[in-house]
Image (cartoon, rainbow over all chains, first blue to last red; front, side, top):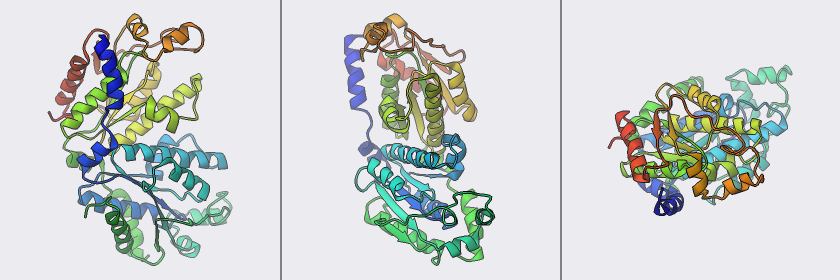
Length: 204
Length: 204
């Protein structure tokens, strides 16, 4: 390549398509919607319900949850303290890439520790990290026990299970608390949409 | 939540917004464009040039390269053999998430080993992984030495540097070979765009 092309190399790296251009193309701001709460509190259900509403409004979204993360990107990680921290760190970093790519990333992980969630918040610019606490009591979540995990945890078959043998640290300053223990899915999803409209993330 | 909502939980997980719906929304197919080649062969420059063309055509894209991966998602990895394998594995997994999200992911990493590239190919469905070999001779790349890395490698300051003290395994069945050693950036980018149009990934 000529000298001209060498310098255009530098230009490409700095004049690349950026987040603002993607947001303009998409017609909405990007952000991370970080759903946190006990197993069975409805995080993934709510995230997908919100995604469906955003899609209907023409927005670009992607849900990161156990289904697409635990067997892929984080398939090498177990459930030790170190691995749990690394799991949340990677999810945070990937969310950041999606946000830079103009997409609304919705994450649905228990993410029980404040320090881990706050570290992800710190990766992102102010306003880009929207913590949504899916608040349902242990009784309600254990009563549902959709995956049978609480039963196993009570039987000692799962160690360090959040709510049973490992703590869940409630968010202190979540952008939104949704009472997923008593509200319907529609009511819960509408609360999230209202916040997103207020923040210019959802257009309608 | 009622029993009805519990079962709607299951429905949400399976009836979620899927790749086909996103591709329809975006008006193009998604894929991974995996640019591979020596340091200085023009991978990142070419990826960004292709991205600019795709953006102009209204497509959704995202470039993964050293700038946004090495200090973030893979910031915990060094350059040992094990860490290099893990680096490419994670990039492959993240690319897959972008593809599921309807986005054309462009990756620009030396990725010198066939086994690592083929592992990423194996993660994806047939046709989703498009290997683009940026073919430029060591002489040309070392002559450019934009980042001064070859000089350091020759001085022994960088160990296991691809092309100098560590092998580069040329692709055997790349979807496209671009002679980035002698062609202009425009010519190279147009070759990639031609392939993408043929495959229905670029619309124009």
